[in-house]
Length: 219
Image 1 (cartoon, rainbow, N blue to C red):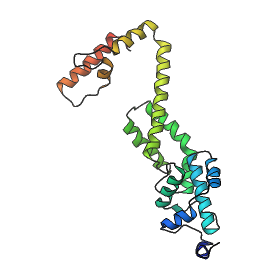
Image 2 (tube, rainbow, N blue to C red):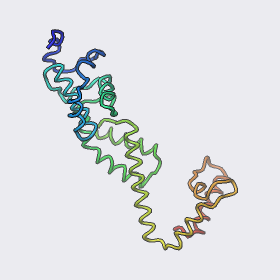
Image 3 (cartoon, rainbow, N blue to C red):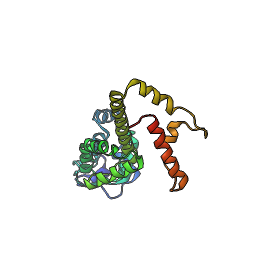
Image 4 (cartoon, rainbow, N blue to C red):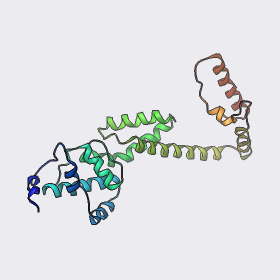
């Protein structure tokens, strides 16, 4: 041990501000340490282990799971391990969020049955995390869960349709939705489009869509 390290021995919490030197000295890992960290399942457990290793090297103690971790340290660990990290969180909040991830997936799966708008689903996921006192994770992670929930819903809906609709009718629908319209859109793109504003023209198009669906014998 070098003399300057004695300053940190026995510390019970991280300094409020960490210098580049401290980050490099305590929270940069050897190949053996990286292999040990990489063996953990899930990014949150990897970050938690890396944090404990660094703090143990700094102070000789384990870090209290209730302590808030400075965002600069999360960013450093993110770069060290090549994984996304939260901006601000306690270890306890991170572990809790990891455990509750499956519950959020179930919530999103139920929600996509009522709403397919990705931005609204993102807002709903943030609200759910906040209401359950969990860390609001990076939007990219939430969007991945939303995409998975939507894909699952589409697959289940497709299976249901194939089970109850006659093959001949399905073939007729497939041909109809790829037909081009006068404006260059396919029927499918036109059916997907939402009215831009309330107007006589937009309302007329809504009724036109309904007539098309009736003509295709869509319930």
